[in-house]
Image (cartoon, rainbow, N blue to C red; front, side, top):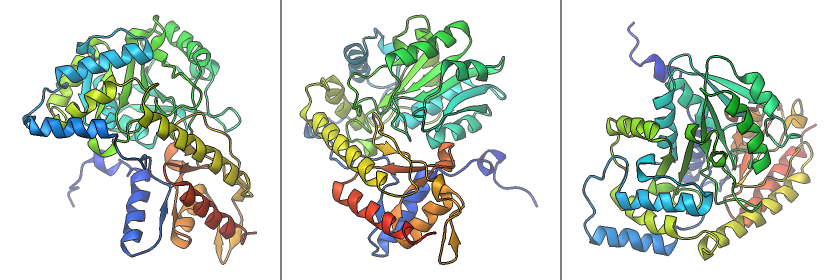
Length: 401
């Protein structure tokens, strides 16, 4: 029988985070009280001044196609933001605005990676990284880390992973799923490796830049000796609570930006005109003076501390204090082999499935993030729900032996 679907689709995995969110919604429709800790979505409303800018754009009839790479005023605002927050001088011609940071990432990967090219990715990693590489017919090379190393790679590990086929290095800081943040000194040490290997490009996913509990964000693009090979990915979803608005952007050399504009022009063209106009005042606002952003960060910090304390009291969970984003990624391998009522925990995946099916708490297993011993908790929800979720989990696991 003729195969209908392409090999590309048949070998592509479904997003584990979206799959668990889909299951959570299906249970909620049945009237079940599901606590969804699987989705990376701030539970805040978009700031009012951004919503007002969107309304003004509608009233001013910005309803036509937008330029593929984004409106000029938005690209200028991104340049100003990059100068203000990251101390980098860039031109609008280096900016491409897309329908979410996920599209920005895919554009960059598709523009750079040929079949067989190797892409080095620290593990754990965001679930879509490996699938994006797969679509580009590249080969993922994963550097394993541990909770003891705070899920960070060393320059020695990076050097050992590089081969003549290495084209790209892809990482996030602050990290999804771990909340890890690389310091300036740690980034400099990695940059020294790249400085010795001139043909390797670096994608720095900085979508969680504004959710940072350590102070100033540090970008690997700050180092002049590798700057022309760094592609910064960022967007509005996380820091501005604009997940549904769908706006991401990349900052790269003019050569790479132009290639991504060319690719995007054949796929989606420009992103939503209203979203673009709404994003301009958000980017122009100094985050150190924004009451909306301060409020969100303060809430995330309280929730981090609360969830860490709660999980530290759950036998079998090994955890740590993350520095940013809104995730905890505890190691649960201490529970493997334990049984209750005919069910045995054999992996993080079986544990997550059992938890959602019995006590209706949605988590994401670490397999999709490259670490089968861990489970991702999103604390982008209320403190009350975090307390109730861990209470359910602790009471359930107390029955296992």
